[in-house]
Each structure stands twice: as C-alpha cells, then as structure tokens.
Length: 167
Image 1 (tube, one colour):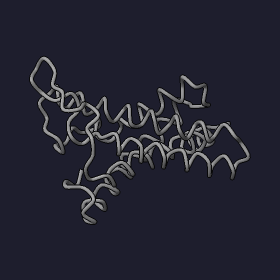
Image 2 (image 1 turned 60 degrees about the vertical axis):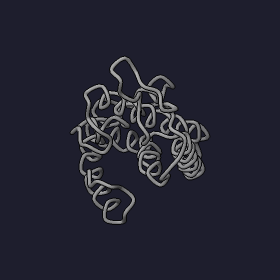
Image 3 (image 1 turned 90 degrees about the vertical axis):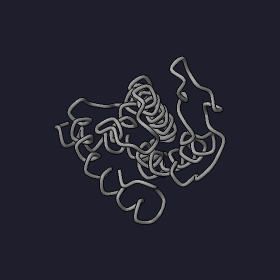
Image 4 (image 1 turned 135 degrees about the vertical axis):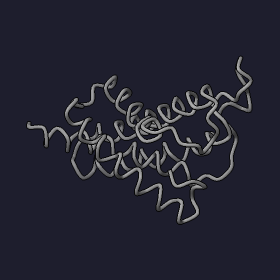
C-alpha cells in the first residue's frame, strides 16, 4: 500500500475522532469532568468546557460513525475502532486542556497546533495500542488535512453560534 493508501486508511480510522471532537461542542452546559477541582497551581484541572455530557455525546457519535464504517466496509472491528478513536480524541482534547490550564491559558484562548491536533494525537495513541493499521505517513497527511479542516469547521461553528471563538 502506498502513502496515499495509508493516508486513506488512516483517514477512515480518524474520521470517528473528528466527529467526536466536533460533536462535543453541541453540549452547552454540563457536569465538568474535573468536578470543579483545582491543582497545586490553583487552576482548574480541565475547566468547565470538558463535561461528562460532552464526553457521552462525543463517544456516541464516534461509535455511530464506527458502526456505519463497519457496515459499509464489512469489517466489524471498525465499530470498536470508532469507539476507541472517539475515546482517544476526547482524552487528547482533555490533555490539551490540562496543558492550557497549567500554562494559564484561559478557556477558549488559542494554543496553536495543540488546539488543532490534540484530539488526533489522542486518537492515534489509543488506536495504535488497539493494533489499528496506522502509518506515520498516513498520520502526517491526515494531520495536514485536519489543520485545514479544523480552521474551516471552527469558523463555521463560530458563525453558527456553536462556538464562542473562531479557533
């Protein structure tokens, strides 16, 4: 399989993560995952933007997309990969929020590259651990695509009133 084939396979594995990352913003309020706790630095662990309800929505959407891919491709493992990609995406997103809080970057303020690719890194890590057929070249190409898509979808979500900021 060439690099384009690897990129396509990686893209199909990451699509549920992309959907999970985008769907969590549909939840406007909820119970914060960190339950309002702070750390040694006096800052919240994650902040109000990471909620159990958003996590549930994200995992549900990712699993549904995994199921669609499993059915379309005739590969049952795609259902599991969908769930795992969503879980990894949300863990990566939470890790990004954790880093931002430690750097004293407020909720919604930009942290370039981390904001765009934290969910991809999390999804890739979990999928890799599950034995999914990811490739470095495929991840590189998909990451470049996601940098462009992330900017476009965030602008659209901002214009639709789903996000407070356009990044």
